[in-house]
Image (cartoon, rainbow, N blue to C red):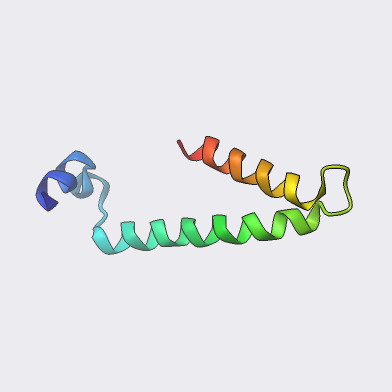
Length: 66
C-alpha cells in the first residue's frame, strides 16, 4: 500500500518523502486550529459575533481545503 501511495502521489518525481509530507500535514493542521480560535477574537467587535465568526471561518476553511 505504501508503494502505491508513493506512486500515486509521485513522491520520487516531486522529490519528497513521507517525513516531509507528514510534517506539512501537521503544520497545516496546527495553522488551521490556530486560525479557528484567533479569528473570532479579531472579529469580536463586529456585528457577526464570536460564534458566527468561528462558524464562518470553519466553513470557509473546509470549503477551501476540499
